Length: 344
Image (cartoon, rainbow, N blue to C red; front, side, top):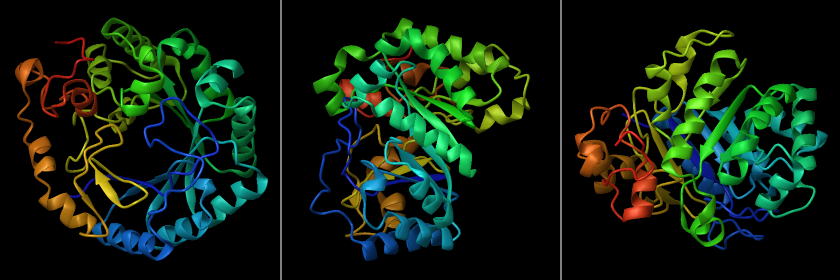
Protein backbone atom coordinates (compact mmCIF):
# COMPACT_ATOMS: atom_id res chain seq x y z
CA UNK A 1 0.00 0.00 0.00
CA UNK A 2 1.40 3.45 -0.89
CA UNK A 3 1.74 6.32 1.58
CA UNK A 4 -1.16 8.71 2.04
CA UNK A 5 1.18 11.69 2.00
CA UNK A 6 4.37 12.53 0.12
CA UNK A 7 6.47 15.52 1.13
CA UNK A 8 8.74 16.96 -1.56
CA UNK A 9 11.22 19.63 -0.56
CA UNK A 10 11.77 21.32 -3.90
CA UNK A 11 14.73 23.50 -2.89
CA UNK A 12 17.21 24.07 -0.06
CA UNK A 13 17.13 27.80 -0.72
CA UNK A 14 15.46 29.95 1.91
CA UNK A 15 15.38 33.65 2.74
CA UNK A 16 15.34 33.02 6.52
CA UNK A 17 17.78 31.35 8.92
CA UNK A 18 15.57 29.28 11.22
CA UNK A 19 17.36 27.75 14.20
CA UNK A 20 15.62 24.39 13.93
CA UNK A 21 15.39 23.89 10.16
CA UNK A 22 14.76 20.19 9.49
CA UNK A 23 15.86 20.73 5.88
CA UNK A 24 19.10 22.47 6.91
CA UNK A 25 18.22 25.18 4.38
CA UNK A 26 20.73 27.71 3.04
CA UNK A 27 20.60 31.07 1.26
CA UNK A 28 21.25 29.40 -2.11
CA UNK A 29 19.78 26.37 -3.88
CA UNK A 30 21.81 23.17 -3.69
CA UNK A 31 23.85 22.47 -6.83
CA UNK A 32 22.31 19.04 -7.32
CA UNK A 33 18.60 19.81 -6.96
CA UNK A 34 16.23 17.96 -9.26
CA UNK A 35 15.76 19.86 -12.52
CA UNK A 36 12.33 20.88 -13.77
CA UNK A 37 12.14 17.81 -16.01
CA UNK A 38 13.33 15.50 -13.21
CA UNK A 39 10.76 17.00 -10.85
CA UNK A 40 8.03 16.38 -13.41
CA UNK A 41 9.13 12.78 -13.86
CA UNK A 42 8.90 12.34 -10.09
CA UNK A 43 5.41 13.84 -10.14
CA UNK A 44 4.42 11.41 -12.90
CA UNK A 45 5.41 8.54 -10.61
CA UNK A 46 3.58 10.08 -7.66
CA UNK A 47 0.42 10.56 -9.72
CA UNK A 48 0.54 7.01 -11.11
CA UNK A 49 1.05 5.75 -7.58
CA UNK A 50 -2.31 7.21 -6.55
CA UNK A 51 -0.96 9.55 -3.87
CA UNK A 52 -3.74 11.61 -2.29
CA UNK A 53 -1.74 14.50 -0.90
CA UNK A 54 1.56 16.19 -1.81
CA UNK A 55 3.30 18.75 0.38
CA UNK A 56 5.72 21.03 -1.45
CA UNK A 57 8.11 22.79 0.85
CA UNK A 58 11.82 23.50 1.09
CA UNK A 59 13.74 25.54 2.15
CA UNK A 60 11.26 28.14 1.02
CA UNK A 61 9.47 26.83 -2.08
CA UNK A 62 8.65 30.33 -3.33
CA UNK A 63 12.40 30.86 -3.82
CA UNK A 64 12.48 28.32 -6.65
CA UNK A 65 12.09 29.91 -10.11
CA UNK A 66 9.94 27.11 -11.57
CA UNK A 67 7.79 26.67 -8.45
CA UNK A 68 4.49 27.61 -10.09
CA UNK A 69 5.25 25.46 -13.13
CA UNK A 70 5.90 22.43 -10.90
CA UNK A 71 2.74 23.06 -8.84
CA UNK A 72 0.65 23.44 -11.97
CA UNK A 73 2.07 20.22 -13.42
CA UNK A 74 1.21 18.30 -10.23
CA UNK A 75 -2.28 19.78 -10.04
CA UNK A 76 -3.00 18.86 -13.66
CA UNK A 77 -2.05 15.29 -12.75
CA UNK A 78 -4.86 15.27 -10.20
CA UNK A 79 -2.58 15.57 -7.17
CA UNK A 80 -3.84 17.67 -4.24
CA UNK A 81 -0.98 20.09 -3.57
CA UNK A 82 -0.40 21.97 -0.34
CA UNK A 83 2.56 24.26 0.25
CA UNK A 84 4.71 24.76 3.34
CA UNK A 85 6.01 28.33 3.48
CA UNK A 86 7.52 30.76 5.96
CA UNK A 87 4.96 33.25 4.63
CA UNK A 88 7.33 36.18 4.18
CA UNK A 89 7.32 36.03 0.36
CA UNK A 90 3.54 35.78 0.04
CA UNK A 91 2.13 38.92 -1.52
CA UNK A 92 -1.00 39.50 -3.56
CA UNK A 93 0.66 38.46 -6.80
CA UNK A 94 2.29 35.26 -5.47
CA UNK A 95 -0.86 34.22 -3.61
CA UNK A 96 -2.99 34.59 -6.75
CA UNK A 97 -0.40 32.68 -8.79
CA UNK A 98 -0.39 29.85 -6.22
CA UNK A 99 -4.17 29.63 -6.32
CA UNK A 100 -4.23 29.67 -10.13
CA UNK A 101 -1.53 26.98 -10.26
CA UNK A 102 -3.71 24.72 -8.11
CA UNK A 103 -2.41 25.09 -4.56
CA UNK A 104 -5.17 23.89 -2.23
CA UNK A 105 -3.77 25.18 1.06
CA UNK A 106 -0.70 26.97 2.43
CA UNK A 107 0.91 26.09 5.75
CA UNK A 108 2.44 29.27 7.13
CA UNK A 109 5.05 28.96 9.88
CA UNK A 110 4.34 31.09 12.96
CA UNK A 111 6.71 30.46 15.87
CA UNK A 112 5.49 32.75 18.58
CA UNK A 113 2.58 34.93 19.58
CA UNK A 114 4.97 37.87 19.88
CA UNK A 115 7.07 39.25 17.02
CA UNK A 116 10.31 39.03 18.99
CA UNK A 117 9.74 35.34 19.82
CA UNK A 118 9.08 34.43 16.20
CA UNK A 119 11.82 36.62 14.73
CA UNK A 120 14.57 35.36 17.06
CA UNK A 121 13.76 31.77 16.10
CA UNK A 122 13.42 32.51 12.39
CA UNK A 123 16.57 34.62 12.14
CA UNK A 124 15.17 37.85 10.69
CA UNK A 125 13.67 40.96 12.26
CA UNK A 126 10.27 41.70 10.77
CA UNK A 127 9.64 38.09 9.71
CA UNK A 128 6.58 37.85 11.99
CA UNK A 129 4.79 40.80 10.44
CA UNK A 130 5.63 39.63 6.92
CA UNK A 131 4.26 36.14 7.66
CA UNK A 132 1.10 37.55 9.21
CA UNK A 133 0.63 39.81 6.18
CA UNK A 134 1.01 36.71 3.99
CA UNK A 135 -1.77 35.01 5.96
CA UNK A 136 -3.97 38.08 5.63
CA UNK A 137 -3.51 38.10 1.86
CA UNK A 138 -4.34 34.38 1.61
CA UNK A 139 -7.56 35.03 3.49
CA UNK A 140 -8.45 37.99 1.26
CA UNK A 141 -8.12 36.02 -1.98
CA UNK A 142 -9.74 32.86 -0.63
CA UNK A 143 -6.63 30.66 -0.50
CA UNK A 144 -7.03 28.35 2.54
CA UNK A 145 -4.17 28.35 5.02
CA UNK A 146 -3.15 26.90 8.33
CA UNK A 147 -0.51 27.86 10.89
CA UNK A 148 2.43 25.54 11.56
CA UNK A 149 3.97 26.24 14.96
CA UNK A 150 6.92 24.67 16.75
CA UNK A 151 6.44 23.79 20.42
CA UNK A 152 9.60 24.54 22.39
CA UNK A 153 10.51 25.75 25.84
CA UNK A 154 10.49 29.43 24.81
CA UNK A 155 6.95 29.21 23.41
CA UNK A 156 5.29 27.07 26.10
CA UNK A 157 3.76 30.13 27.74
CA UNK A 158 2.68 31.53 24.36
CA UNK A 159 0.85 28.44 23.07
CA UNK A 160 -2.63 29.68 24.13
CA UNK A 161 -2.04 33.00 22.38
CA UNK A 162 -0.54 31.24 19.32
CA UNK A 163 -3.69 29.13 19.03
CA UNK A 164 -5.83 32.25 19.45
CA UNK A 165 -3.79 33.98 16.74
CA UNK A 166 -4.44 31.11 14.32
CA UNK A 167 -8.18 31.24 14.98
CA UNK A 168 -8.47 35.02 14.72
CA UNK A 169 -6.40 35.10 11.53
CA UNK A 170 -8.79 32.74 9.78
CA UNK A 171 -6.54 29.65 9.65
CA UNK A 172 -8.39 26.41 8.98
CA UNK A 173 -6.11 24.38 11.29
CA UNK A 174 -3.37 24.80 13.87
CA UNK A 175 -0.48 22.38 13.56
CA UNK A 176 1.91 22.27 16.53
CA UNK A 177 5.23 20.54 15.81
CA UNK A 178 6.99 18.86 18.73
CA UNK A 179 10.65 19.89 18.34
CA UNK A 180 12.87 16.92 17.45
CA UNK A 181 16.64 17.14 17.77
CA UNK A 182 17.84 16.77 14.17
CA UNK A 183 21.34 18.05 13.42
CA UNK A 184 20.60 21.79 13.21
CA UNK A 185 18.51 21.63 16.39
CA UNK A 186 21.43 19.94 18.18
CA UNK A 187 23.73 22.72 16.99
CA UNK A 188 21.55 25.79 17.51
CA UNK A 189 18.62 25.22 19.88
CA UNK A 190 19.13 21.97 21.77
CA UNK A 191 18.02 23.56 25.06
CA UNK A 192 14.62 24.34 23.51
CA UNK A 193 13.55 20.67 23.45
CA UNK A 194 10.75 19.84 25.89
CA UNK A 195 11.21 17.58 28.88
CA UNK A 196 8.88 14.59 29.17
CA UNK A 197 6.76 16.37 31.76
CA UNK A 198 6.56 19.58 29.72
CA UNK A 199 5.51 17.54 26.68
CA UNK A 200 2.84 15.71 28.67
CA UNK A 201 1.43 18.94 30.14
CA UNK A 202 1.23 20.84 26.84
CA UNK A 203 -0.33 17.87 25.03
CA UNK A 204 -2.96 17.59 27.74
CA UNK A 205 -3.61 21.34 27.46
CA UNK A 206 -4.00 21.11 23.67
CA UNK A 207 -6.40 18.17 24.01
CA UNK A 208 -8.56 20.14 26.46
CA UNK A 209 -8.35 23.22 24.22
CA UNK A 210 -9.74 21.20 21.31
CA UNK A 211 -13.12 20.99 23.08
CA UNK A 212 -13.83 24.69 22.51
CA UNK A 213 -11.49 25.35 19.60
CA UNK A 214 -13.37 25.95 16.33
CA UNK A 215 -10.48 24.62 14.19
CA UNK A 216 -8.65 21.31 14.19
CA UNK A 217 -5.47 21.03 16.27
CA UNK A 218 -2.84 18.66 14.89
CA UNK A 219 0.44 17.63 16.50
CA UNK A 220 3.14 16.12 14.26
CA UNK A 221 6.08 14.34 15.94
CA UNK A 222 4.03 13.33 18.97
CA UNK A 223 2.14 10.05 18.39
CA UNK A 224 1.17 10.15 22.07
CA UNK A 225 -1.19 13.09 21.51
CA UNK A 226 -4.07 11.02 20.04
CA UNK A 227 -3.82 8.70 23.05
CA UNK A 228 -4.74 11.67 25.25
CA UNK A 229 -7.66 12.59 22.99
CA UNK A 230 -9.03 9.07 23.44
CA UNK A 231 -8.13 8.80 27.11
CA UNK A 232 -9.99 12.03 27.87
CA UNK A 233 -12.78 11.24 25.38
CA UNK A 234 -12.44 14.71 23.86
CA UNK A 235 -15.67 15.85 22.18
CA UNK A 236 -15.24 19.05 20.13
CA UNK A 237 -18.14 21.47 20.33
CA UNK A 238 -17.71 22.92 16.84
CA UNK A 239 -17.35 19.81 14.66
CA UNK A 240 -17.82 16.06 14.74
CA UNK A 241 -15.45 14.06 16.92
CA UNK A 242 -14.92 11.83 13.87
CA UNK A 243 -12.78 14.62 12.41
CA UNK A 244 -10.24 13.99 15.18
CA UNK A 245 -9.48 10.66 13.51
CA UNK A 246 -7.93 12.55 10.60
CA UNK A 247 -5.14 14.02 12.73
CA UNK A 248 -1.65 12.53 12.40
CA UNK A 249 -1.10 9.15 14.06
CA UNK A 250 -4.69 8.61 15.24
CA UNK A 251 -5.01 4.80 15.61
CA UNK A 252 -2.00 4.45 13.27
CA UNK A 253 1.03 5.58 15.24
CA UNK A 254 4.28 6.93 13.80
CA UNK A 255 3.69 7.31 10.06
CA UNK A 256 7.32 7.27 8.88
CA UNK A 257 7.51 4.93 5.90
CA UNK A 258 4.26 3.20 6.82
CA UNK A 259 1.52 2.03 4.43
CA UNK A 260 -1.03 4.84 4.22
CA UNK A 261 1.62 6.89 6.00
CA UNK A 262 4.38 9.25 4.96
CA UNK A 263 7.57 9.58 2.90
CA UNK A 264 9.89 12.52 2.20
CA UNK A 265 11.87 13.46 -0.92
CA UNK A 266 14.72 15.95 -0.58
CA UNK A 267 15.74 18.56 -3.19
CA UNK A 268 18.51 16.34 -4.61
CA UNK A 269 16.17 13.35 -4.95
CA UNK A 270 17.29 11.55 -1.79
CA UNK A 271 14.44 9.75 -0.05
CA UNK A 272 14.06 9.55 3.74
CA UNK A 273 11.20 7.95 5.73
CA UNK A 274 10.15 11.25 7.32
CA UNK A 275 11.49 14.77 7.67
CA UNK A 276 12.26 13.82 11.28
CA UNK A 277 13.81 10.43 10.48
CA UNK A 278 16.72 11.46 8.32
CA UNK A 279 18.11 8.15 7.04
CA UNK A 280 18.71 7.95 3.30
CA UNK A 281 16.89 4.97 1.78
CA UNK A 282 17.44 5.75 -1.91
CA UNK A 283 17.45 8.43 -4.59
CA UNK A 284 14.79 8.94 -7.26
CA UNK A 285 17.47 9.57 -9.89
CA UNK A 286 18.62 5.98 -9.42
CA UNK A 287 15.36 4.18 -8.66
CA UNK A 288 11.69 5.16 -8.79
CA UNK A 289 10.04 6.34 -5.60
CA UNK A 290 7.67 3.36 -5.87
CA UNK A 291 10.52 0.83 -5.97
CA UNK A 292 12.30 2.56 -3.09
CA UNK A 293 9.08 2.35 -1.09
CA UNK A 294 8.60 -1.32 -1.88
CA UNK A 295 12.21 -2.52 -1.55
CA UNK A 296 13.80 -0.53 1.28
CA UNK A 297 15.07 -2.72 4.17
CA UNK A 298 14.80 0.29 6.49
CA UNK A 299 11.11 0.72 5.68
CA UNK A 300 10.53 -3.02 6.10
CA UNK A 301 12.04 -2.76 9.56
CA UNK A 302 9.87 0.21 10.50
CA UNK A 303 6.75 -1.58 9.26
CA UNK A 304 7.51 -4.65 11.36
CA UNK A 305 6.77 -2.62 14.52
CA UNK A 306 9.34 -4.88 16.21
CA UNK A 307 10.18 -2.12 18.67
CA UNK A 308 12.76 -2.45 21.41
CA UNK A 309 12.84 -1.48 25.07
CA UNK A 310 9.77 -0.02 26.75
CA UNK A 311 8.10 0.90 23.44
CA UNK A 312 8.22 -2.79 22.49
CA UNK A 313 6.42 -3.76 25.70
CA UNK A 314 3.87 -0.96 25.60
CA UNK A 315 0.19 -1.79 25.07
CA UNK A 316 0.00 1.21 22.71
CA UNK A 317 2.79 -0.12 20.47
CA UNK A 318 0.66 -0.58 17.35
CA UNK A 319 -1.35 2.64 17.62
CA UNK A 320 1.50 4.87 18.79
CA UNK A 321 4.98 3.36 18.30
CA UNK A 322 6.55 6.58 19.54
CA UNK A 323 8.38 9.03 17.27
CA UNK A 324 10.93 6.99 15.33
CA UNK A 325 12.81 10.16 14.39
CA UNK A 326 13.33 11.17 18.01
CA UNK A 327 14.34 7.62 18.94
CA UNK A 328 16.95 7.60 16.17
CA UNK A 329 18.38 11.06 16.90
CA UNK A 330 18.82 10.32 20.60
CA UNK A 331 19.93 6.66 20.46
CA UNK A 332 21.06 6.00 16.88
CA UNK A 333 18.55 3.15 16.71
CA UNK A 334 15.32 3.58 14.72
CA UNK A 335 13.61 0.83 16.75
CA UNK A 336 14.55 2.11 20.22
CA UNK A 337 12.05 3.46 22.72
CA UNK A 338 10.94 7.04 22.16
CA UNK A 339 12.88 8.96 24.86
CA UNK A 340 10.26 11.71 24.79
CA UNK A 341 7.32 9.50 25.79
CA UNK A 342 5.81 9.93 29.25
CA UNK A 343 3.73 6.73 29.05
CA UNK A 344 6.81 4.49 29.48
